[in-house]
Length: 79
Image (cartoon, rainbow, N blue to C red; front, side, top):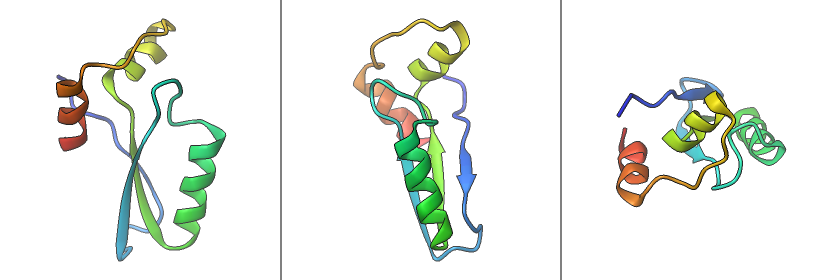
C-alpha cells in the first residue's frame, strides 16, 4: 500500500498532537473537520490529518465507494 499523505496544522513544537481522520462518507475538507482543526491549532495543539486509501481513490476518479476492509483501515492508522 502506498504511504499515507499526512496534513499538519498547528505548531510543530506543540506539547500535544491529535490525529484526525475523516468519516465514511466525506473527506478531510469538510467544514466540521476544518473547524476542529483550526480550533485546535489556534490553541497550540498540533493536528495531523490523513485520508484512508478508498477516499484517496475517490478523489482521483470521482467514484463513490465503500470504506476499505478493516485490515487496510488499521494499517493506514498505523502508518
